[in-house]
Image (cartoon, rainbow, N blue to C red; front, top):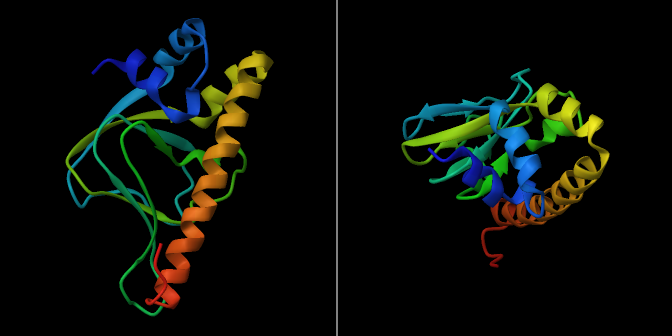
Length: 155
């Protein structure tokens, strides 16, 4: 797995220097999941984010009535999920489930946040990218929730 290439192509790290990418590489841990395996569960207290080099991850919410989970979003190639840990320390609010057999890169929030705090220019660029990601996710989640509550609504 070419970790440097994966970081460079990921939406969270777009526009950042080769030096920055090189500094992030040692923070990454490769983790593997089988199709259908839960990566993150609602209520988990871990604070890591995940980069998706290949494959797809379903971001979903289980309802208390036992019905099928609601699809909130999907993370696919060159995307990130679990990124909310960079802005808050709350428990996980949704499940992440592997839709394919896959290897992901996991980065500790503490490691990345410490590095960004000591490199404010890079931190600023990452936070701009993060704001774009969160904005797009909010729009997509709203669309999925509208579809779930009124199946006749289309894209």
